[in-house]
Image 1 (cartoon, rainbow, N blue to C red):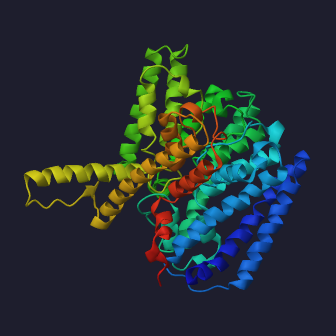
Image 2: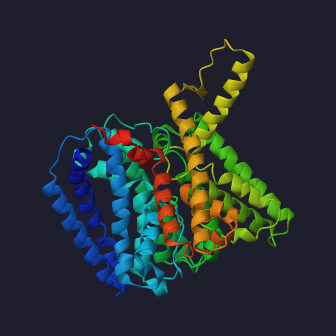
Image 3: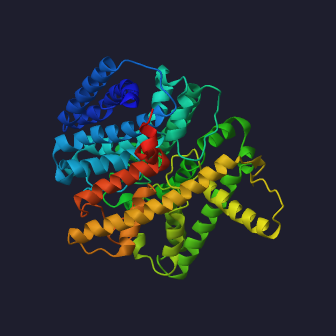
Amino acid sequence: MRRLKNVLGLLGTIIKWFGVLYIIPLLFALFYGAGATAFIVPMFICLALGWALEKVFPGSDLEVADGFLLVILTWFGVSWLGALPYIIHGVGNLSEPINAFFESASGFTCTGSTIMDEISVEKYSHAIMIWRQMTQWIGGMGILVLAVAVLPRLSVGGVQFLDNEVPGPKMDRLTPHMAETARRLWVLYIGLSVVLFLILLVIGLAGLDPVMTPYQAFAHALTTIPSGGFSPLGRSAEALAPIVQWILVPFMLIAAVNFTLLWFALFKGPRVFWRDTEFKVFMAISMGAGTLLGALLLGADQYPTAEENFRHGFFQMATFISTTGFASTDFAEWKGDSHAILLLLMPIAGCVGSTSGGPKVLRWIIAFKVIVRELVQQIHPSAVRPLRVGERVLHEDVVKGAMIFLVTYLILFVVSVGVLAVDLRIAGIDLPIEDIASAVTATLGNIGPGYGAVGPMAGFGFFPVFSKIWMCVLMIAGRLEVMTLLVLLSPWYWRD
């Protein structure tokens, strides 16, 4: 209970500032003349709840271990509070609390899996749909990074909270001060979002894509940079013009690159990219997979022209490896071996310190080097081989952490497939095991769409209630690198 009391005051501050964010969709509701109540009520609930928690639990010194609890409470709490507009609006299947929570959690974790029965601005209103996009933009770099950037109380010792929040084994600091680092990351994050919005806006105004209205440009910018994938269009990015689909490809890949590396590249030049092993491996995989997919689609005569085959190949490569979740086409209908490439990309994900989910490229590099080192030591038992990634010698704690994560990730995946299979059987729903595995991969890896029944043009609405709750936990666990959530389930954490 002591840990809980330590963090509730700060949690109240976060919730209070979170409530302020409802002003943006409220403005859309007032402009379009529909749905204002769905945001006014949650805003006052957040402000009142946040104020009450601050008063009842005044600030206290936070320990490193308190950061784990704060992170988890924030993500679960904000996901529930973010579901209130859907429930209050009362339209479609999002009026059901569990469905609303699923959609909200999918948004804040930038997963992109949807439960909506019909993705339509006309049905759900512009304001509700823009809130859906905003949940991904807010979650993209992490609510706690925003908190570190604007709330002084997290500036002292804030690195512990940021390490728990930003994806990857460990994040390099841009400055010695955590608050300044967070501010710079947000400047970059906002800057990329604005640049993409302006590009899409110009394309729409120039008549190059009739679908790309200012609203659509804003919505797609909000969900591309956070590697989210929520689109206000019924069939994701399929209706977008080819030029827009090509433009989204590099932006999805940029969002999957370490943001500290992007920041250094802005001021030290692009050479910093080629000194980073993870970036080079990531780009090699991306370009190789995109080219191979395009060639396979071309060879299978999937689309009429070479441009179309390579466009969809590169687009789906980018959306899978960045865990964005957009779909330029129904890739479930592809012929040949192209499915195998996408399935291999699903667990790779982007770079550490990016907005993408999943295990990250660096962990796979470490795992590969560990295997090579063990093979060499079998031949030369007395050899001492420090593990290097590029010019950096990795501490054994980092190596151990990466391997523990991958093993834990695999165990959680297997257990989750079993849990969903049993729950579906109890509910009388017959779903192939490969579709269940695809659903687990899509939610745990924060990817969004999967294959089969959870394909790019389908949804997760048919799952039983318990399965939906389990997948919500998977989405949050995946977003928080799995171990953060498991630490709280450990009995040792609660022993003072």
